[in-house]
Length: 175
Image (cartoon, rainbow, N blue to C red):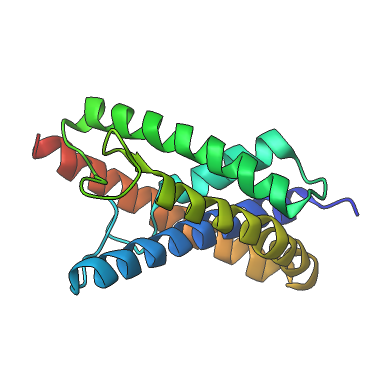
């Protein structure tokens, strides 16, 4: 089915927000399980961690929308997201002069910047993305009225961009 431009925009904005929110939930739950405290994870004020959404989009760009074997998808995504997480940790540390996460003390830690355990969880999240979230967003953009899709897209992009601007400014001021 050929989608109009506004439907494609809605789909990617929805997926960015949902994947970023899923990442935030994963991080908050992980910290709660490990340390028994609530910590608002991520660099934004919103409950969205953009690295999860960017990782999902990288996988989507590499793999396309073809149906994939879930085992292949899991293994491939685990490898790609591990490399992405390692690279992103160095890049963010270079830009902001601080580490946003560490796997110090984790089993199978890779330079304390990634862990085979978290990488396996990212692989599971990628399978959920490709078999759950991505098809759901396609159905939503086909079913929801144009005004709802455009309104959501404008509101979500405005909120995330504003939060990103404010958060980056705060991080750079605190270097």
